[in-house]
Image (tube, rainbow, N blue to C red; front, side):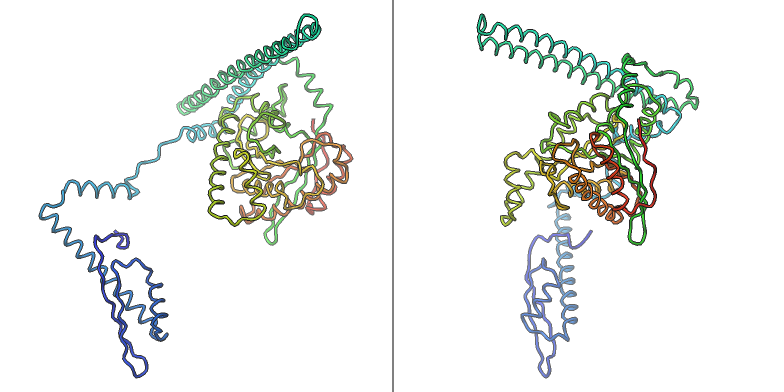
Length: 551
C-alpha cells in the first residue's frame, strides 16, 4: 500500500523548527504545517527560502530536514490511525465481515492476476480462421463460394433494374397519355395526382428490392462465416482437402451473354499506366514505388462480371491481404455530407452493393457510425470553443459553418470505410473537398492538400502500403481545366506528396510503399505523356518501367 494514497480521518497542525547560523547570529525558523501535508515539498521549500530570505548555502540542509520532518510525522500519524483502527476492531465497533469484504473487493479490482480475462471476440476469431484458410489449399474453395455469392447478387440486381425500368417505361407512357388529355378532360390537379402515384409506386418498388437485397446479403454473410468456421474445423480433423474443394464449383453466370460486350468495352478504353522506382531519405534512404495511372476511380472497386484470369488474380490478392499488414487504400473526393445519396458517393455505394461484404459491416452501417462520431466530435469542439472565447477569425468562420449543420464535415477532413468486397481496395478515404479545388489558385496549405498529408500519416500508422491518390484533386474534367491548369495542379500535388513521403520515415521508420497517382479517363494521351515526364523530374526517379496499356 502506497502511503501517499492513504487518507487520515483528522488534520493536525505541527511546528517545524530549523536552527541555522548566519554569520555571528544563531537563527531559528519556526513554520506551522498542516498535516497531512498536501503541498509539494519542493514548492514549500522554495517559498520558505524566498519569504524568510534564508542564505543559499543552507538550502540543501533545509530541504533535507524539512523532508525528513514531514516523512516522520506522517508515519507517526499513520501509526496513530492504525492503532485506533485496531482498537475499534478489538472493541467490536467495526464489523469484521464488512471489513474483509471491502478489502477483498479492493484487492481483486486492483490486482491484474484476479482481473477477468477478456472475452474472445467473434470478429477476431473469424479473422484468424479466414486468414489461415485463405493461405491454405482451401483458398480456391473460398473464392468459388464468394464468386457464387457475387453472381447471385448480380443477377438479383439485374432483375431489380429490369423491373424498375419496365415500371418507368409504363409510367412514362401513362404520363404521355395524361399530358395529351390535359386541357380537354384532365386538369393540372389530375396530372399532379398521377405524378404522385407514380412516385409512390417507384418508392414502394425500390423499398421492396432494398429489403430483398438486405435480406439476401445478411443470409449470405451469416452462412459464409458459419461455413468458414466449419471448414476450418473439418480441415483440422483431416488433412485431405480434395473432397472439400469438390463441394463448391464456380457457378456459371446467367449474365454470360454480357461477357463479350463487356470485354469489348474494356478493349475500347485501355488503361494507361507507367511505373517508377524512387529512393527518398536524408541518410537512410527508403525505396518507394510510384505509378501514374489513367483510369476511372471506381475501376479499382468494380469486379468484372465476365470471367478472366486477371480478375480472379486481383480477387485472390485482395482476399490474401484483407487481414494482413499490406492493405490497399483509395482516396475518394466527396462533399461535406456523410451519406451516399448523390454524385460519386452514390456511384460508389452502388458498386459496394454489387457484392456482399462478408467481413465488415455494410457501407450504410459504417456511414451511420461515422455520422454519430461526427456529431460527438462537433459537440466536443463546440464546448472547447466556449471555454476559449479568444479564437482566430478562421476559427470563428469554421464554428459558424459547423453550427449551421453539425453533421457535416469540413474541407480537408475525411472519414474511412472498410471493405472486403471491392476489387483492389480494402480501405476508402472519403476526403471532403469544396469547389475551391476546381480553381487554379490553391496552395500547399489548402485543406485538400493537408487532408492528403493526414491520409498518408494514417496509412503509415495502420499498415496501408498502397494508396491511390487523384493527382488533379478531381475525378472529372471540365472546360476550365486546360493543359496549363493540369500541369500546375500536378506539379503542386507531386511536390507536396514528395514532401509528405519524406516525412514518412519519422512516422513508420522507413517502410517501402506504393503511391498511385490517378488521372481521369477523359484526359488525353498527350497530357498523360507530359505528366509522366514531369513525375521523374520532381521525384528524381531511380528507374522507370515502360509505358503500358492495360485492358
